[in-house]
Length: 213
Ligand SMILES: Cc1cc2nc3c(=O)[nH]c(=O)nc-3n(C[C@H](O)[C@H](O)[C@H](O)COP(=O)(O)OP(=O)(O)OC[C@H]3O[C@@H](n4cnc5c(N)ncnc54)[C@H](O)[C@@H]3O)c2cc1C
Image 1 (cartoon, protein in one colour):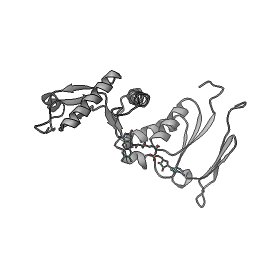
Image 2 (cartoon, helix red, strand yellow):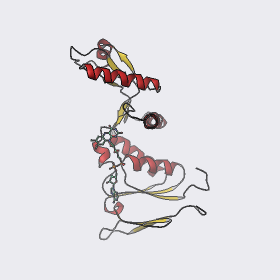
Image 3 (cartoon, rainbow, N blue to C red):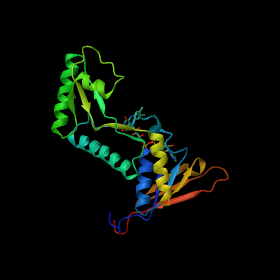
Image 4 (cartoon, helix red, strand yellow):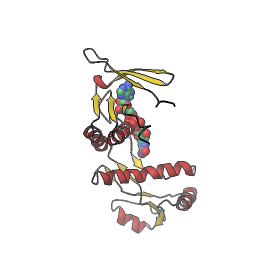
């Protein structure tokens, strides 16, 4: 984004995975950020997520590509933060027992490898070497191995990204002070009101598009 279009002040509502990523990126880029969270960061949907990093069964290809780019971005972000422990590139094993299930899995592997996604068949013995506690059914033949997949430990990820935002100057308000109680969209603007609890200061934010837009 050009400096001319870059907003100087931004209010981010909600400190789930989306909010903390946006807040951290904006704050790093020099924007004055206020991150508002009515509870504690990462305690809503993000907390109950399996947080599986994959583009395994996503169609059409544009959706697959977006998910794959997201996987690579998480790897890059974790590396940029010194190899964050919340990033777990464990890979993923999958197998099918029924004839129909095997045919579907084989078709998915063909589609994914055609799209350049790391995926291949390995033997049951190789799968057992990767995951010694795995007990495959006798009828399971080859196993699909997706080495680029993994998962996130969401609590520590949210916590670190909140810290990154704060370290770059973001104001993080949680609980009643961070509770947005009103949004008032009017043409070309958005007004918000937060921190309306008794005794708490009422904050007001206002966003406008850049001049001429
Ligand atoms: C069971 C389950 C499994 C999942 N598994 C996966 C998976 O494997 N892989 C994957 O990629 N995705 C998965 N997802 C989806 C993923 O978890 C969500 O897409 C993601 O967590 C959404 O993040 P968010 O930041 O948008 O929302 P949230 O985490 O819900 O964050 C929104 C935040 O906004 C705050 N908030 C709400 N209203 C206000 C207000 N008025 N004022 C201030 N703050 C407010 C909330 O308190 C909350 O903290 C799964 C989801 C579930 C439920």
